[in-house]
Image: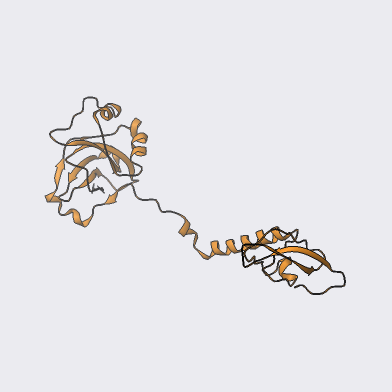
Length: 225
């Protein structure tokens, strides 16, 4: 209960109950505290410096001050801020995945790879569409109608191979060209050979005729000085 005061008032309010039936009681409150007689069947705790705590009341009572909501909001914001500063900001920033991975060691020796000769580069006017299509995956199965969209009407893959839209990387584009290789473990290696020193690596996309869906797509950027 609260401390006794020369000027005290008696209020009726609902306090935390053990059963599902709210019970009413009468307690003495200091001036300025306005209780709210709302049914309450669970213990309500108050911030240490709130008006309710300063009044000396047990935290189980449902007693609210006109400014209680403001105190509670500030108390919660302060604790949220502590949590945010407790973790590095980098933990909340997702690191973007690379457009293509490097060649894995499981790809084996290059002399054991099979060269893929039937492919073409997506024209610059369609590259943004290709990037959107490949946003979540490094390759995507295509149809004959897709060949028309990418500027190669009538393009047909030989034998049992099927067309796939695949990610590609290049630098020194004006001095180089693409080569594709299929490893024994089904990894597609997208190589771009060029002259000169390495420069800014840029994205591209290819339509390639593959024997099956690749187990992965990797990039290789060799340079000849």
